[in-house]
Amino acid sequence: MNPGAYALFAWQAGWVFTLRSMQLGTDPVGASAALAEMVAEKQKAFTDGAFAAGRAALGGASMDAVAEAALRPARRRVSANMRALHRKP
Image (cartoon, rainbow, N blue to C red; front, side, top):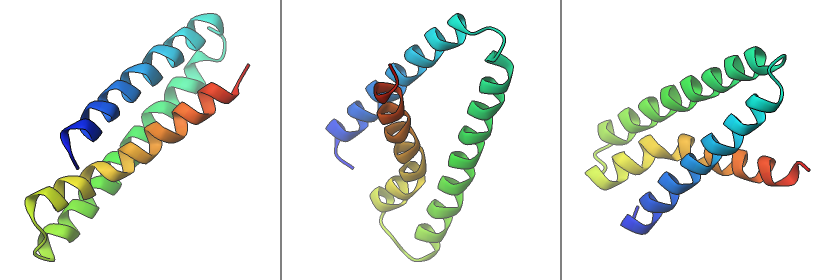
């Protein structure tokens, strides 16, 4: 993954965090369930990335490929969250 892709990922993650934080502030009643869902999706992305990185490393992949495999689930989740947040009115 090139440096620009890392920068985009970091920007998207920060933007998703900001938008979701604003949503939580407008719906305190539903915040607990939303926070639990967010935690679960991050744990799944981390676990999926750790297993993917392990498979890549055991397969003899380069360090760049291992890092890409580790980050791929989180990048997909952040991209999906960006799309979902921009679709909602």
